Length: 194
Image 1 (cartoon, helix red, strand yellow):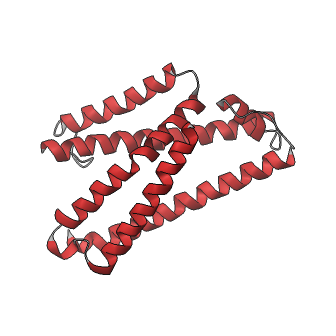
Image 2: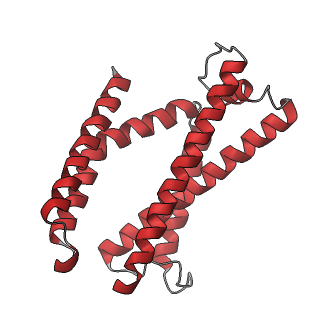
């Protein structure tokens, strides 16, 4: 409801900020660990990354913490991606698409969610080089960014109720940020390929 918009905005902003702070902390900790070990070892596989990051904490504790971190990240990613796909399919088709429904009330939603999780698990199990897979997925995301953001801006300008549509100076700022982000994303994606 419109009364919930403020809470939803705060929830989104705080969630985005928290995830970026955690990511920055992990990157700084990893950089400090690798710098203190004076390691020039390649980081081409998950095992090599774990081996490079764990000497400071010891073999058992380091591998355990690295494994738990990878498991947590994978679970969050699987849930978010699969739920987004199931929700989007429900939006397009008109089927019930919310976790508030029992699986018997929303069988299509839960079926697509389950297929997304199982499909993701199969891809991870069958692809031998997970680092290359992760880099490939990020490059694909970067190259698709202009399309996705462009469609979101178009929806925000046309499909939202008139009181909530992008307009005026705010629309100009949003479009400028979208263009800048898209250009940087495509540049980064293409730089990775060549």
